[in-house]
Amino acid sequence: ETGVTQTPRHLVMGMTNKKSLKCEQHLGHNAMYWYKQSAKKPLELMFVYNFKEQTENNSVPSRFSPECPNSSHLFLHLHTLQPEDSALYLCASSQDNGQGYNEQFFGPGTRLTVL
Amino acid sequence: GDSVTQMEGPVTLSEEAFLTINCTYTATGYPSLFWYVQYPGEGLQLLLKATKADDKGSNKGFEATYRKETTSFHLEKGSVQVSDSAVYFCALIRVGDSWGKLQFGAGTQVVVTP
Image (cartoon, rainbow over all chains, first blue to last red; front, side, top):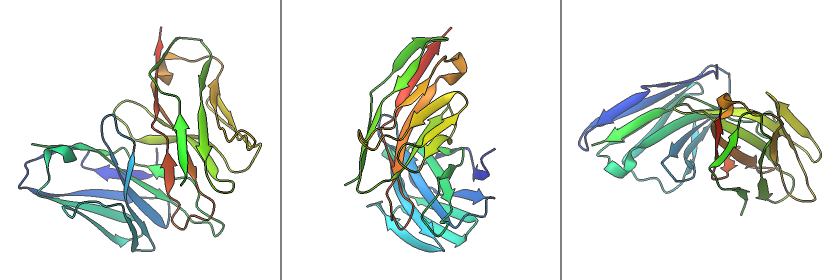
C-alpha cells in the first residue's frame, strides 16, 4: 500500500469533454507531483506543488490545469484534450525533512484515453 | 544538467538467473539515488535508495551500491523470479533541489521466463 490514491483508475473522454483527475496522499507529506507516462517516452514531470504553491510547469499546455486545495489533495483538470494526451497520469508525494527531500511515493495512476 | 542513463531493454532472462541493470548519472554534487519498479498496470514503487557515497540499498533481494568514483548505481539480484518481470527506473534527486524533483532514466524492461 503506497498511501497515495488516485481516482479514477481509468478514464475515456472525448476531445470536447471536461474531466478531473484526483489524487490524495495519506502520508502527511508537504509536496505533490503530477507526471505523464506515455508509451516509449520517459516519465515527464508536469507540475510540482509545495505548501500549496505551484512551483513547476514544464511547458505543459493550458488544457491541463492543476489545483492543490490543501497538502493532501491534488487535482488535474482536463479540457479540450487531444488524442496524443492519452497516457498514464501518475501522482506522487514526498516530504521535505529540512535537509532536502525524501523519496517520492507514487499512486497507481489514471489511464486516460482521449478519443 | 542532471541526467540518468540506463541500459536499454528489454532484458530477457530465465528464472534463477543473475540480473544486472546498469545505471550511471550526471549531477552536481552528491545526489540521492533511487531505483523504482513498475509492475504491469501499476504505478511506480520505490525499490531501494542510497543517499551518500558507498551506501548500499537493498530490498526484496535487490541491491545497488552508490559508487561516486564511477557515478553509478547498478541494480543487481542474484536469482530472479517470474514475478520480477517489470520495468525498472533509476532516478536521482539533486542536492539542494528546492522541490525534490526526481530525474528519471528511461526505464529498463525485464522479462523473466520460467
